[in-house]
Image (cartoon, rainbow, N blue to C red; front, side, top):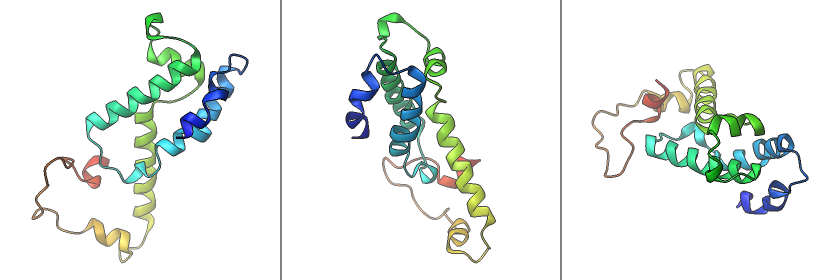
Amino acid sequence: MKWRLAFGVLYDKNVPLRLKGKFYRVVVRPATLYGAECWSVKTSHIQKMRVAEMRMLILMCGCTKRDRIRNEAIRDRVGVASVEDKMQESRLRWFRHVMRRSIDAPVRRCERLAMESLRRGLGSPKKYWGEVIK
């Protein structure tokens, strides 16, 4: 939704790439990664996020896939870090926040629950949030 609202600004040839990158980092990425610190993601989810982000960045640069420009070069032009790094960063930030809480806090109590007896349903992630952090 946010991407469609920002469509005009981000495709304008008169707007510098660095400014488009800043707009992307401030408006689009937070909407995309809202709550990502608590997600236990599969590698396929990360790949889909990577592909979606690169599509947006390629369109912002005014390039096409036929130009065959490397993803790192496009990220450097726009000044944006990879979505995978940002997800990991937010996950670790939340983990540090949880660890600062007292042992009796509800957030910390959830971490001590025994998960061995639970069966994971069909289509659920193979790892829990704590396992993703490790």
